[in-house]
Image 1 (cartoon, helix red, strand yellow):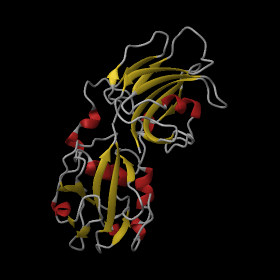
Image 2: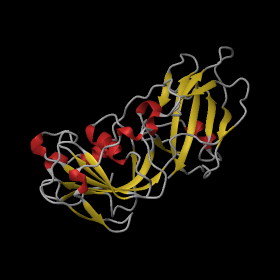
Image 3: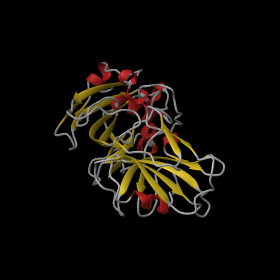
Image 4: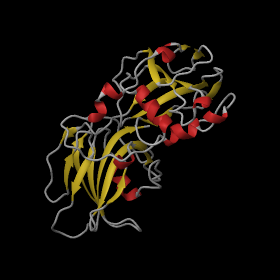
Length: 315
């Protein structure tokens, strides 16, 4: 995350690191017929504290923010200051945003992403540490292009009443897919069977006959129509890999609660230490929105596995 600007209040000093970590939570397959992540009923309500925040200026540019001080709230709230015209964002999505954090007691700036040469990628998730979960609920179901003010209570900052509240003003600039949305392709005989939960999380069944793969083999379950993955792309992915022999999960971004950001050329990952480049190489030439099944042989300490990868975007 970008470096802080302005005075750093002790109780808020690790906000940027906490937002960057974005708190992870396990996700299980469910029997629901609808995607629970699309439920707007869990979004923060608007309230007196968040309604006191004013932020002027063009979306995507650093706003001029004014709040009455001290501003305090016992419950976190959100107000959409400027409503965008894009699609609403939901839990489980990765977004690109710009943000500024103010101390509620003094109105002084604690942290900002503006002026750091890029946007901040942020996964909307309700697990893990209190602040990213609260911020996710504050942004939930706001349209892309919106400016949102979130008044965060001291409890949701992970502090005591003496800590005071904080105000986070966020511009939602972009949202990546929450799951592959490409055209369904005919299945190919002999590949692992894939069943999808309403959230898009896959369940993978390894074929009972046949030995572990000795070479790479790929099947496209859904053919996307978005941008094309290149060798040097940084991609937003959701994936699960199940070991061929022991049937255990080897890698999973779904279990972390949010998509992963992965360098196709190096395998560098935000969720896992690194992903095998041989597997990532199978994504080159595929389009955003695609879902790919990859049979991968053992590679070093990584066992032979069946991968299901959703290509959600390219940064």
